[in-house]
Picture 1 (cartoon, helix red, strand yellow):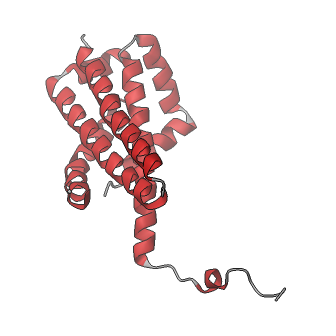
Picture 2 (picture 1 turned 60 degrees about the horizontal axis):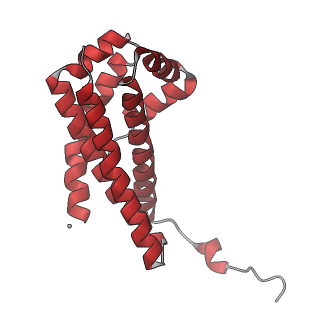
Length: 182
């Protein structure tokens, strides 16, 4: 009895494609919400002053900032199932637009970025990007809550908090971007 393994099924478990896809889906959902939140924080700071622009510029030019930009541009963002698929299809061109523009403006001056952000097409497309990115990410993370949180009260509280932040953070960011003027 003493030499028997505690969990023999772990030694013979084989990875399945469905489990790998599920795990990667959860990981990208979490990375997505963190990245989009960081982007919102940057644009909220940007709306304050030129000094905060310098801070953001320093961060984006650092090793961690370049890693962040690489992660944003490298990743492909792939009732819930239908919304996930539709929102991911809409999010792909928006993410491509955002990635291309982020790469082109991250080291520009405050006035150049302000000119870009104050144009109506940029405001509109950026707003759509935020809405769909948070929508997609909130749906992905709510799947994690559904799978791993067993207590219904905690699960409901987590989903309500997630939905609250998925609505308020993009709205605050969109308000800050629309407040910008040259």
